[in-house]
Amino acid sequence: MSHPVTLIPGDGIGPEVAAAARRAVDATGVKIEWETAELNADVILKTGESLPKHVIESLDRTRVGLKGPVTTPIGGGYTSVNVALRKRLDLFANVRPVRSLPGVVTRFQDVEIDMVIFRENTEDLYSGLEHEVVRDVVTSLKVITRTASIRIAEYAFRFAESAGRKKVTAIHKANIMKLADGLFLRCAREVAARYPHIEYTELIVDNAAMQLVIRPEQFDLLLLPNLYGDIVSDLAAGLVGGLGVVPGANMGEHHAVFEAVHGSAPDIAGKGVANPTAMMLSSVLMLIHLNEHAAAKRLQSAIEKVYAGRRHMTRDVGGTAGTNEFTEAVIAALG
Ligand code: NAI
Image (cartoon, rainbow, N blue to C red):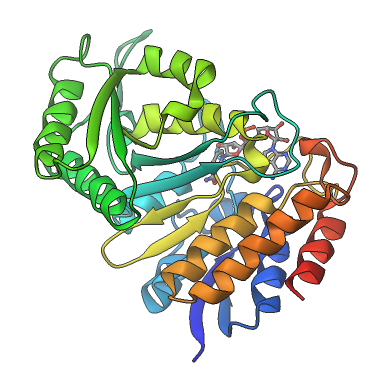
């Protein structure tokens, strides 16, 4: 059986890491009908659509996407297509597993880190509701709803249960944003009460940032509203080797789009040095979603084997290999 998948190369390092991930997936022997959909700054400016129709049409057909990063201009210009895509397809759960990799030298290499971040993906300060009240006075609306908060909490606890995980930590700032984060927290508590066998704890986001650096091994599953989830994901990535090694999944009721945590990395784009691990590990999550568990396991093990060997690691994790050399090594390790 062959699986239709929309491949969105994106821009910056996107096309390089997407091509590497595609090669690795194909090398597992799983049959994928790749449908490439261009989504990048050029297409957005040319079509004038922040979310071009052909991308949505393809994802509506395939229901599954593997996506490279897309640049968002800072402080002006078009709105984020990444955020627009998540909203348009109601990809409400952003799931980001953060795990130590063998062979990667980090400040935390002696600690076994294995946590999964559940970031609400559709609202919060990402609502894009900004308004200049009068000149030099701007408001930006933080939207938190019961529906979205219950939905992400349910998703996290269901995952905890099915994966045999022990603890969920909700992260918030309800001491200050008593109504908005207070609602998020009430929903998390309500769902937690239905899972008495899973430990439930809460941390204020600033304390959580410190705890993550001081004692990262205490964390199992993290449950966060959108903005804290975004920031904490990058912090957590830093614990295990950086943005080059952390994958992600955007999950909705009807669609799933897999993408790395990192962005388009304009500083290294086109140089052939980007680390494709995060995209490859996102492909592992995609293979699991497609019920191709054996292939997912083989690809994950091949990546870990390359890291354990330490000879083909990319620059960002202390090696000297380029994107291609790492990719070839993973394909060779697949056997
Ligand atoms: P970034 O993740 O692109 O880069 C941050 C740093 O990490 C850079 O030094 C970069 O070289 C390094 N890095 C990232 N991925 C790497 C990889 N695979 N291998 C080696 N090094 C890697 O974050 P930044 O600079 O904040 O954002 C750049 C652009 O990406 C912005 O336009 C932003 O909006 C966009 N972005 C897009 C995302 C998406 O499409 N889902 C997610 C995050 C950012």
